[in-house]
Image 1 (cartoon, helix red, strand yellow):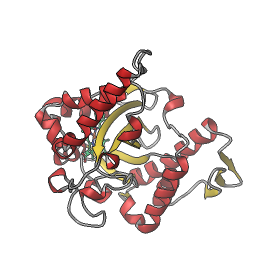
Image 2 (image 1 turned 60 degrees about the horizontal axis):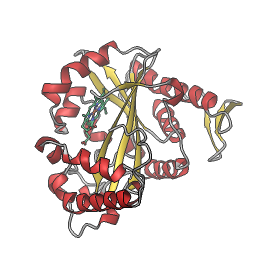
Image 3 (image 1 turned 45 degrees about the vertical axis):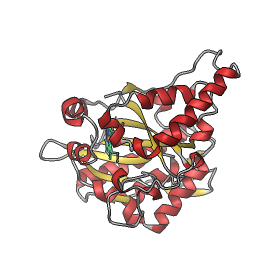
Length: 308
Ligand code: HEM
């Protein structure tokens, strides 16, 4: 499954790009609130939304006390000047407030009567190539099978379902992935189709014509999963790191390691990640950057950690 334990202090990560993420999320929420925030109207899910807001507020006010402060019935964000009512009784508002305070998208997976975890609520503003309404209420298995996740049924399904059932609030986990994207849309990859269209985004329909290396982006999600202690829902957070490959490739070792990782994909993974749309541009570029790093002695220093 590629999951690791995560320290409490690193459950939610913030960085200097906070305002860019915040402003894009705020813009998306203003454009289409109901497209980005949804919840199943039953007592457990309502409570899970409110609990998400409470947990995130408590976490942030302790972890980043100079930025997030709780006083006078409001959470204040010193960086944006926002203040959100706290507590908040409306589940959709609670989720939206929580989402505006972090760089992550937020999803709640709740066990339904069929014994399966379903995507029963979320505040998802920066997904890149899927829409909340397409996945809303789907079970964990349907979500992954419909997205065509490579080797899901034979390698992941059983262990993921077992893991979801046995998770406890004190043992959150983290995993990372990466994708190659053909444009600079953090919230939506427009080369995969129109954001307000009805077609599900897919590589089969993506437009890679006249693609230049400067357009290609490295998209990596840092996902965490934690059981909420009161509602027992699972909070899944998706924090996307998003940079032009031309920037990422300046880091020592990265062009070589990235090209190596891509070349190791089997056919199923290559199709899933749209390799044929970009490999002829990206791989020669990475190879050239790697060659320059060798030539300039940049690879003599010890390699840092690389989670992929
Ligand atoms: C232990 C937890 C999980 C594991 C091990 C897992 C595994 C995976 C893997 C291997 C993929 C293929 C792309 C990648 O490498 O990330 C994937 C894609 C996906 N996962 Fe998960 N997943 C987990 C939890 C979840 C949850 C809770 C959701 C609920 C929203 C979810 C939604 C998706 C979606 C929508 C995609 C498809 C993205 C796309 O290609 O359009 N996953 N997952």
